[in-house]
Length: 262
Image (cartoon, rainbow, N blue to C red; front, side, top):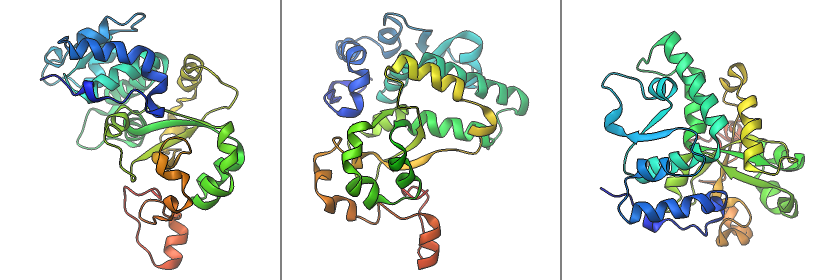
């Protein structure tokens, strides 16, 4: 069954880094090409994309990719975006795949991922890099949403958020206010995705990443990403823009696992 790539809004700000490559590939899929075929035909593809049926039964997905440099791919939007991330972030994706494969070799697949594999999966599915002045990062880490998005709003002109997580890209096909990215800081001086890719591949160090060094950020709160957030009242929704756990504890409040205070 063909994925709904024909409904991708390529004008969405979070898809701008992928548009030049992604839109022509999406057109091929709409015209009937399997997702794996369209992705493999992309210029400079770092590996092959193969049908999901090529994955041998009982073989871990990550281990298969590491051993064969082939990515099993289904005909759906989720795997289409995963392929686009591979095309734009080949060094970081390869490094993540290496760490996953090493952990599987050492620990087996198991019913529960260890801390490192869990962190890598979280970022692979829902991660983003944020290049921003330090005051914005201070406010984000403190979950001070008023300061982050209203008081310091002019500073966002000096910031850039780049999505990495393919599941988040898929979900943003139907944007909802509670959608959260797990954000990792990147140097503001890096301009191109290729250079960000090289930097991230080096930054993927097991000891640090096992701690999940991310900050949750509701993506539709990013200035310029959603028309409704031009109004300050957009950020008054306490179910989305929740304070940090320590503040909630002092107030006797409970924090949901999927909230922006996670």
